[in-house]
Length: 212
Image (tube, rainbow, N blue to C red):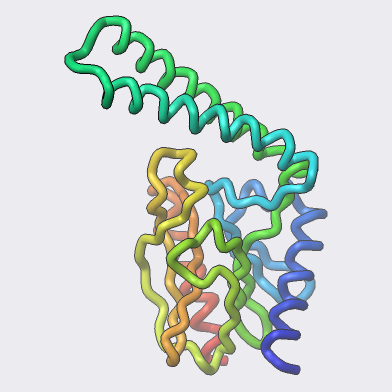
């Protein structure tokens, strides 16, 4: 079985499992399935797919959000001094942008419109990263590495564009690096209480797979 085949099968199994286990996916970052794979979710991050209805509903909101952000920048850059009207308009735009961001975050919780389909899997043959190119602009977003090819696992931070909804696109991640230099990223946004335990758990699972 070549790497492409086993990687695609692990991804398909993960998508099917998540569709039936939304409650579990909300609460956990590491999900052990009955299909001999473990799913590592980008917990705390808006990393979801979108069906046609979701795209049509989200597109105007994102456009309006962009206008609300750019409008005060345009006003401030073209106005000398800071007239009270300019300041008030800028503040109102930022408040509306904040409210719209909250509305978008609520909409992303609808799994019928935005299903879970981006994650990392730990399977029998290796580890698979499945994300969109728009989510990881500086990194290969779809990659599979066999266990025997892994060289190291390290902690770091990665540029993850959807995290802009929280004001900072740099997120905590684990980096799984192959002997050939390929890199799989496992991103998440967790509280300080859960972060250390989650990182250690994932590192332990990967170590067990490599040394079995």
